[in-house]
Structures are given as C-alpha cells and as structure tokens.
Amino acid sequence: MSDNGQLPGDDNKKRFGGVTTTRIVLWVVVGGFAVYLIVVGIIGILAKAQ
Image (cartoon, rainbow, N blue to C red):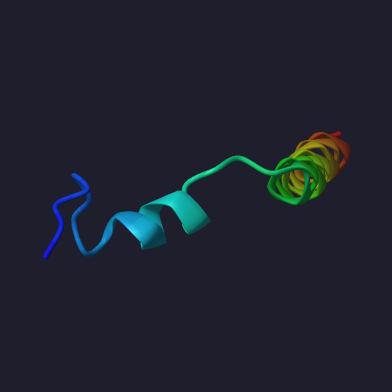
C-alpha cells in the first residue's frame, strides 16, 4: 500500500473546485438577469408613484 499524500475525497475537490469559463458565463447571465429585474422593478415603482 503506497501513500501518495491524497485523501479519498481529494479527487472530487479537484474535479468540482475549479472556476471554469462556463461557470463564469453562467454567473454573468444570471447576474445580468437579476440586475434587469431590479431595475425594471425600481422603474415600475417610480412610474406608479407619479
């Protein structure tokens, strides 16, 4: 039995821990949609107040 310094769960951390381009694009799209909803909501509140 050889000891290579890895724990049994290290492979999962390596596979799921990195920041990929797909993850960045997903966050940009979701963040953009959230900003859109917030801005539209504020504009709607201001338009109704007048």
